[in-house]
Length: 282
Picture: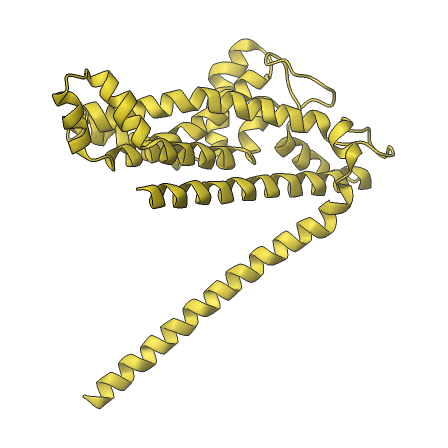
């Protein structure tokens, strides 16, 4: 009996220390990455970085203004497309197809879509949008990012809608409210923080995607805000500048990488805040 207890205690301690070592290893790797980004990227951050367009090779100065604005345009357009589609799909699954076989099929397709490699999404959009149009465009880039964001919003919104007690829906229906009013004023309102959290997570997911944009929006060395033309964006610009032999381009690539990392970190902190505040209110 004592031998068995001693064995269990030793096994528990070994597992405990392995967990600690894994945490320390993960934190060390993340810290080294973040240190490298700050060390190489912070010197590139200046007023010119945000107010001047991408420079020519080996030129003095320059910034990533056009790439930053282009990424904002593509990301906002993608979220504007993915948000209503994702919320409506989640509403159908939670409010109309709950317990039905078609809901299981749609969830399976959504999960497959969620785990699909982003480069496959880029190739698909290139085939159905870019090739027929005859040119790369910000519109095609927004569609590819929207296809990546949509299943994230759908999954998170459905989970939040399923947490709304059925008693609230039944009480509203008993008062004579139609189904669509119950969804808008009861289900959506009760789960709005969770839905917003899913939207923020989708933005964090797509803000650093490079592969889909290589096949859709490509890049632009000059200032452009047209959705029908190639547009500069941070992920592709960082990829091209980091692979170049020019020191000024490499420095701007480090700065762009630091900017995206800080942006994604901010979104994750914001998501945690909404999650905790929603839990306290509930």
